[in-house]
Amino acid sequence: HDQVGIPLSDAARALLSRPGPVLLPLFSARSAQSLGAALSGLDVVARLRIAALSPAVAKAWTGPEPQILEISPRPEAEAMLGTLVILAELA
Image (cartoon, rainbow, N blue to C red; front, side):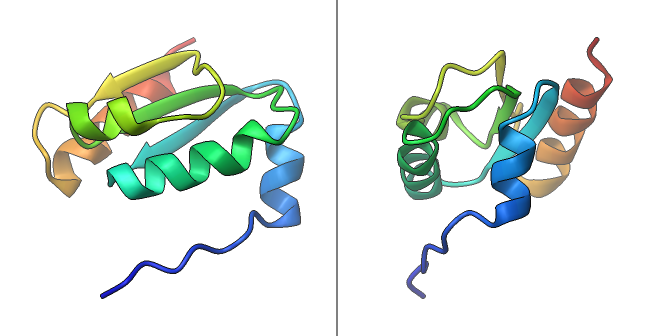
């Protein structure tokens, strides 16, 4: 199945324009590239905390410099959830 990109919602834009941490799970290189491109055109004030499914997904990120970029220890949803929990608990 083909992925169909959708524009960022007003709520997402508002969240990204405010200070504070924002968790961003990236499950594919394609989504990393397309979301990175969308965020590159915005004034992102939020501190992005990215959880990438794999090194290839992390490498595909083209958006603003994240505060933290962690790669999941295994390329599966449960491991990604664990990575997101770690990122959420950081000060």
